[in-house]
Image (cartoon, rainbow, N blue to C red; front, top):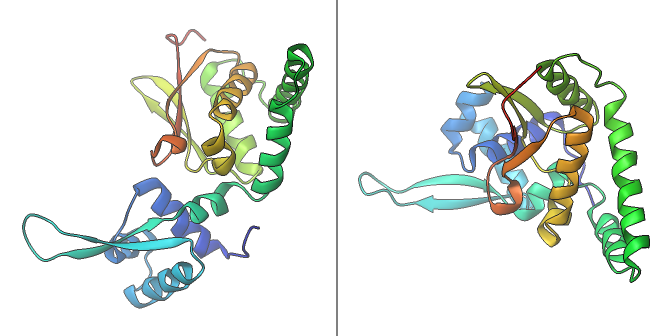
Length: 210
């Protein structure tokens, strides 16, 4: 079940997701909040089971503490209905008749494509990437678009289906197909939260031709 967190709590969890790990000073620098306030928030998030602390022993200097997200923290960021989603997905995958199973999967993809695609109407690929980012943000997803070597990259700062994706990588492939339909271009999922990365990145498979 999703816990009630305020915006600063969410900001700390998102920073830890993006960075992989962070010290108190890292979080102070990123949030412009005092070390005392950051420490109190981290302690509370630890008590909730969303954050853990690890000791880093460098080759030089004294050991220091860094904070990381727990699995519960990742689920909190992007999966408010994880248990229900997993049960429904499991039932869908167990449909014995391949044609029926594929028909249901196709319907799910079509629904998601319509949900995201109504506002994605840009003439150029860059415009469409930006519009999809805005739609996903409105739905509560931490998403950004980066231009690298002249090409747009769609980056999810936290997986919206983390627990489901951990159980079955097919959900990542379905999300990729939905984004491809919405954007009208082939994509490659180059890294994912499921595989331990700090974010999911979708790159153009082919060079951009607006």
